[in-house]
Image 1 (cartoon, rainbow, N blue to C red):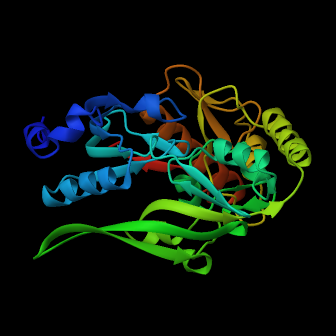
Image 2 (tube, helix red, strand yellow; image 1 turned 45 degrees about the horizontal axis):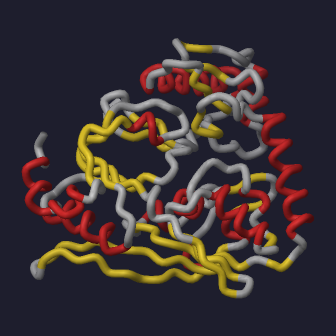
Length: 311
């Protein structure tokens, strides 16, 4: 393995602590349950460890990818070269009056549950979104009329740099308006900023009322979406003036499959993994859907999921 001996020297302490692994199957770390192995897999617990790993990648020209819950990803069957840095263990939540601070690796479901227990309202819309705080801020996640931008107060991020003085990782902050939020977009997509944590400003309310709203939205989600099967959520962005699922359904593609990759019978905006689907099959299905919808309705469907690695 190209980087293994260097890591054994430079990151020996992290290796001994079990924070660095090699040839780790990525299908176990994404909701689609598809993808090959990560050449190197890191699970830092602290900001210092995360900075150490990033500085190593810069110094040794190791490509890296920051992985949250992997709920909006299609990963190559060949896996990913370089370093995959998982935030799954970087997951602390704290409260200060009506403000909740959450590290990037916190599951949205855990943050919403914590807010409910604390009697703080505003995150109910996100309770069923199967992602992390970092991923949600990265793409301005939303559902049922709510978006992350509606409740976000500020964020902290890291910028790894390499110059004539060496490598470093500086920490900076973003105000809400500096996130440049738009539909499924944020400044984190256009600039090389690594999200560390965010603060959310919520409103006091009864935990029972908050729970009732969360339960209602989750019932709707289970009724309308294929929650029982592996998927990456909505595959396509909603085209202006149309509903993606209806366009696909009207093309007669409900249930259409290539191998074990299939258009969901329950919601045609989802592609599901029926068992042993490959990334290649999913990509072929995406292309077939896009071509069919364009030929029938003249509408170009743009993917919402992120496609990683050599396909």
